Structures are given as C-alpha cells and as structure tokens.
Amino acid sequence: MRYGTKAIKKAKLEVWDNPNPERDYEINISFPEFTCLCPRSGYPDFATIKINYVPDKKIVELKALKLYLNSFRDVHISHEEITNRIYSELEKALKPRFLEVVGDFNPRGNVKTIIRVVSKQP
Image (cartoon, rainbow, N blue to C red; front, side):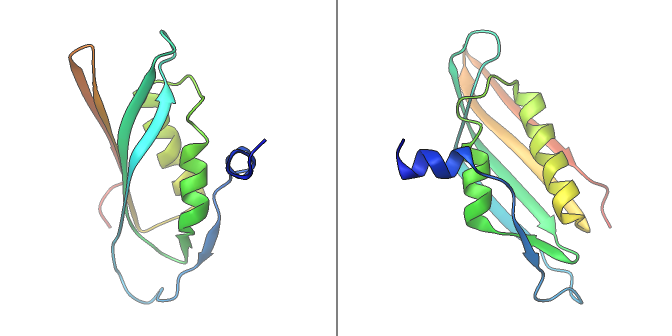
C-alpha cells in the first residue's frame, strides 16, 4: 500500500486552537477534486466541496481535512448524504459560530446537483 493510500485510510478531522477567537472572521475552503461513488450505479461522482465558516475556539487543520475528504473516494453515498455528513462532522469538531457546506456536483446523466447545508447566521 502506498503512503498516500495509507494516509487516506487513517484520515480523520484534526482541529487546532483558533489564533484569534476574539474576532469574527470567515474561512473559505474549496476542494475541487472531491469524488465518491453513486450508491445505485457505482459510477464515480465528482464535485467541488465548499466549506465556509466563522470559527469560535477551533479551526480545521487543512491537510487533515484534505485527507478526510479524500477518504470518500471509494464510498457509495448520495450527494445529499455526503454533504450533510461533512457538515455534521465539521459542526461537531469545530462548534463554529457559522458553518456552510456546499456540494457542487458535476452533471451526470444530464442532471446537475448542488446541495447546501447551512447553520443559522450568528
């Protein structure tokens, strides 16, 4: 097993202390090479996952986030389920002041899907 495959297999979200918890600021992350598998056909689904959040006490470590998102590449999961799962796991780990996760999936079978999960504005 190659080192990248091993790292993805062990992937989990990692959080760090927010260096500026006294201030509201927005973090925007775009992951344009997200892949997972259709639960019905097994065909690959490709998406850009966008994460926008206002941290409270914690921020997400970016390499761990990259590996975590790559861990779904062999998972059979719907667009709706994966976007909501990413949101729920980030919400649990970060407890941010605001969080939005958007799954912008490439068209397949002439259908384009965008899933948006967002917390209430602070």
